[in-house]
Image 1 (tube, rainbow, N blue to C red):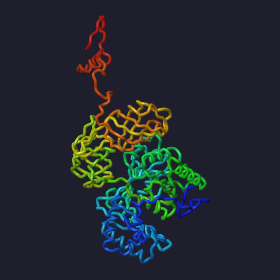
Image 2 (image 1 turned 120 degrees about the vertical axis):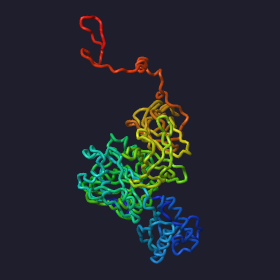
Image 3 (image 1 turned 180 degrees about the vertical axis):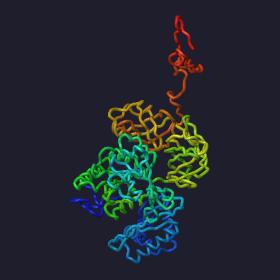
Image 4 (image 1 turned 135 degrees about the horizontal axis):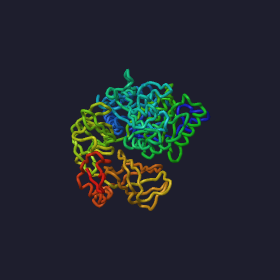
Length: 607
């Protein structure tokens, strides 16, 4: 059985706290580089520090905010080498005042998450968030996966619109994009929804009288915005789901499990995909209001068994109180624990705990502001009066309005220069976008039919080169027979989604469970790939994961794509060389002016 922190999750469950590895980049326990005497008094480091000590703490906080992408969590009253943790009320008050001064000096907001009694007093956990401008906010992307009918869209409708479901899918109607989705109740495309939090962790989403959300107002009032990537659960939409997991670069994965059905269908498939891509997972069990208790307990046992299996190796923690939420959120980046929430979209049970957990998540993508900008495209539009618009993720660097970037690769492998005439983030106009943020660009002198998913925009100093071939190391997760040279499958690598063929490998054949280094060749277009990017190799029931090791920009175009006169039949060459003339249909003719016998003669005449 899984371990529950704070409360029992059922009869016969022992309350043994799990071993949660410490994360020094998130939780502060002592000053770095202290002597032994300092370590003995490290829990008192915030109690009336001198000017020199205050400068050290200020430099440390700035480093922690930089490392945590604008966020840091401190534990006040915890020390290294102390016989008893905790502070008396007067010292705790002095410590919190020092932290508040540090936050003000570093232009950050300060919030006390909880105070917990210990043997020598109390300890406090506080979160500090760097203040942002009105047109800026912290962004965290969460992919929502799970089997069909697990309640993914309904869950997002309840979270983002603040209204409970009626038990018949009313909450999900506001999220669907297509008519057939409304009729069937099944998501078939990649949907995007946002949930904004202010500096105190309160939800700022407010629906208007028509039930819609003004994204620009939400972003202006938010310090942090959670972007939900609503993916399809049906098996026939697996291609779309894989593209959402690879192309949209989620920071975390929220796996939905129906309490009445358990982990069936595509749930394990989606869990394996998240593990292969290295995305931390937390589980949300829905529909607990309509599920009998014995069925719920059996399905929770199955969830626990799957998470503890050798292929997953996670520690499931059933979240049932606010203290559990803080414990999971401060240690979630270790990727060893897996919080499990049990919620109801009809009664609203434990929805508040899930919102608190989401407000404490921080992005995992480093912005790399010192590098030249790179932007990957996952969607393109044609907006009337604006022109071609592309959306995607800024991988690194800073992109501003009027910057000139190279767009490509085109079908011939070339990159075209284009200027950015406008930038929007979550439908809010901004002047720049930094690494790790999603945005939409309005482009100059580019038509939409020139743009496709998987293209990139890079700085001209990068001298980008498209590649027909690349080398990658793959691990076969499942294949019914053997894979050899000339085998073709769909490659998902970032936003790139194209069929590739294996032209060589370091082994004769590979089967399920084998690992090999293969050289791939794209079938249709050259692509811009980066070394070290994770990829998914898929074809039917065949699934493999891997990583790009090398690219070969000097590789030539595949012979099958080269235009050649010898490949055109002689009859077609003759026909295409003659100009086509339109024949008039006349009386006594059949078809379009074909030769017709003339009455009384044995000859033919054509009109």
